[in-house]
Image 1 (cartoon, rainbow, N blue to C red):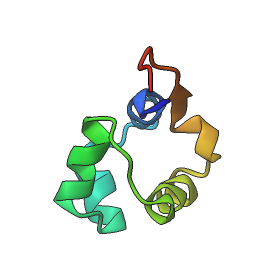
Image 2: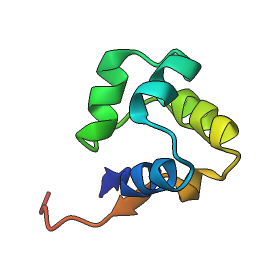
Image 3: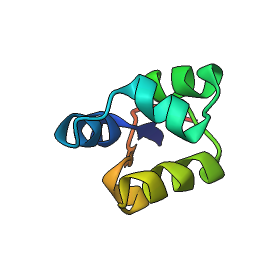
Image 4: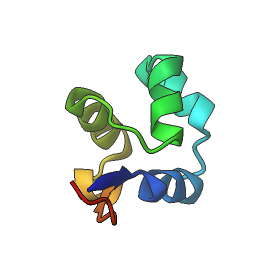
Length: 71
């Protein structure tokens, strides 16, 4: 499984919030923003802060996406 933050970027566009504004308002590290852009794992605490800021649920900003990787 992999994580996708596509919903986050769509929600930011709908609410007319730039990623830069989100980062500054929540004091998110630039490295964490890079992880979000690359669909990499970030701390749950960061995701919950984003949810509180956007007044949404965690499922509104990310999805678990099945991959074809074989273990």
